[in-house]
Length: 462
Image: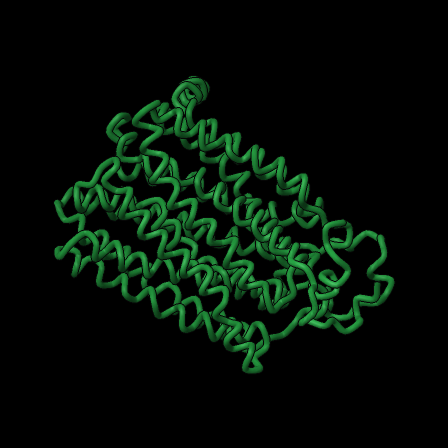
């Protein structure tokens, strides 16, 4: 088949690429289910083990720090061993990490003995959960580099942000399912069972992935017409480049010389921490501000994360409005991202209006979180707009590391600020400070990204 032949888009080209999108959606759902269990159990575990806000921040920061470092290497691994194998490795490791949480206390006691011999004393519960979070982070770091690479393999540029928005909405579904299932499981069988039962789901997904996924050129379920449609907007390459010859390795230093890499990395650094903050601190916020515990937080969190599904899918569609009017994919995405960047400003009203009802901050934060998911669907896709497929996962990894570092800094800041103002019986001021940072992050990120990459420029010299 000649991939350069014109494709009749109106013809029945097939829809197998959307099956792949569905697989990525469910993987992302499981990814967020596993990481959300701790935040939902945090009030209970904090009471049981006597954790302060700083202790909890240290546990979540351990996840974010290891996630940040692992993202850098995860992208390289995905580019080197391929999407299919990389996803298997990733989900095995993160499912194991999820299961380890159930045994965090005895693990912490064991490691604590070794550290104690060196004069380092850490509470066993804190140490054990930090270790479990670290293993979870190593595996979960592989999800987005692999998913974005799979999207670049299976979708033309015009559909990538929509596909990304759809699979990225799995994060919201995971965040919705978690408060519905985790407190119920914990109340019936104990908090350890919640980690075990949720952690086992990943191994089920893995068997389906191995059955249904392969690269497009080797996928027997993909029609020739659909493959041609997927490849229709690729930059033409010499015939020799399509042979089975090994692809030259692209180093991190090579990627860092491009402004496009720095633009993506800065955008992730500024905004990923906002999502981490919403994800890890919302149950604690509802508990601290409104005294909500256990099942009481299920409905507010389910409503909030249901809102974010609209943002994720709608944000993925939004750039097509500009592309239909002649904008290049990157330029259309940047226009969409500018509009999206204004929506988080409503989070500034969460504290001033919070005395009306807890539903006011829930809905306003829901708008901010929805905007993040819309932003995320687009910022990920800017990479596949401009970089060749062989380097997409590596660039995603670099940006993911930057985002993880931003998340660590915001989490640590949150723990310190909340403990400081809690001691002064003014926790509301602490949340106002963090909400202000979250509200302004996207406009700052967009301005810097636009300055670094004013217009679309595809990279062809890698």
